[in-house]
Amino acid sequence: MKHAVDQAADALRTLFPATPLQLNEHLSARYGARIYLKREDLSPVRSYKIRGAFNFFRKVIASGGTGKTFVCASAGNHAQGFAFVCRHFGVPGVVFMPVTTPQQKIDKTQMFGGEFITIKLIGDFFDQCYQAARDHVERIGGVMVPPFDHADIIEGQATVAAEITEQLPEGILPDLVILPVGGGGLSAGVTGYLKDEIPTGDFLFCEPEGAPSLRRSLEAGAVVTLEQVDNFVDGAAVGRIGDLNFEALRHFSPEQVLLLPENAVCVTITEMLNVEGVVLEPAGALSITALEVVGREWLEGKTVVAIVSGGNFDFERLPDVKERAMRHAGLKKYFILRMAQRPGALKDFLGLLGEEDDIARFEYLKKSARNFGSILIGIETRKPENFSRLKAAFDKAGLRYQDITDNEILANLVI
Image (tube, rainbow, N blue to C red; front, side, top):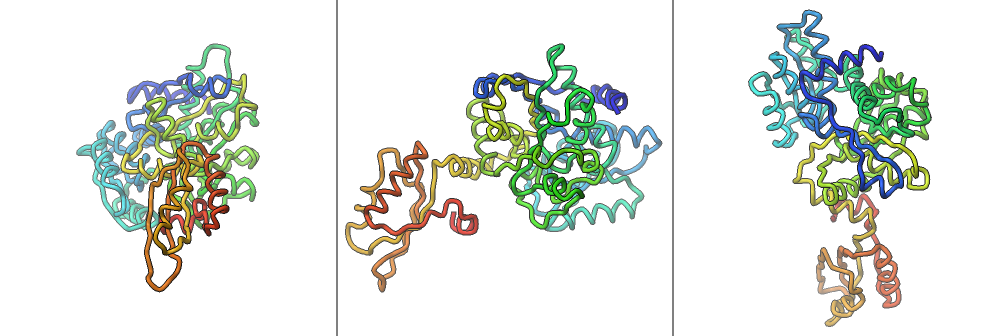
């Protein structure tokens, strides 16, 4: 495998230079370790997906595929990598996207592909879009470019590992390699390339809590299709890991797959933006979020490589990311209160708040035939422990309340 991957990496240099492997001083100081970030967010399309697409195209064209139309179904990073490679090779491509795809993603894909690609918006859901793409390939005799479940895609993603070995200081191998997982192409490629240098137990995988396709498959000993997927970490929200990728990863333990809360990922996104000036998409923040779960006690003194898989972040999502981050950090909570309908009741309530507490949301509907009214209130504070004091004040005042911050059904309805 190594020789083929090294050849792919050499060929890739005609497209873009190796992405940097950077020692991050901020994270290294926090964990007492040497934390290296492999910055795939600095590729031409701000994700590693361009690697697999390039390698797939390269192989097809070399085997006589000139003149074929290439087709993919994607609303994200795969589409952008596909489009960039179509323009590079000067071959026609068709990108199928759901009708619900944000205009920003459509525009970026068109920008990367230029005159060489056509975008078709089909269906409200990805499955409908994917089937339309498959039907189109059969109709025109084209070439379907899969996002992750193909040997040439895996080989292309493995070039990340080839670059890491070249970029680490001489004589140093990582004690831990942290890999984000969606469809599994990156993980299958990187672990396959490094298997002779790094023990199996020194790899750690991370998935969003709402899309644990690798974890559930390893637990079952076979590929599992998830019934439901939380799409917030859209770059890794895959309901079924690739079959080839699972075969490459099935010898790992389920305990090596960390399931990370989506709101914890938001904490990483906001921190890396505010402290380091690094823009990460949710999937791109997974490996850094994993550091907090592993903790300083285990990481101290170690050399760690965390792959930052993408930086295609839509800033229209920033308010939601900040909201989720504050809730996860315990700095913001939502309550439903029962407040007496009498003059001065609101003033009495406000007197319960501390100096560091701030009302971020307040909704009150007075009903004339009742003695009490319901209030939805959102409160922000500077330290998580302030909420213990506030709840004690509520109890002492005899105020009936319900904390709905972690009630996903209620929170999604009212927040």
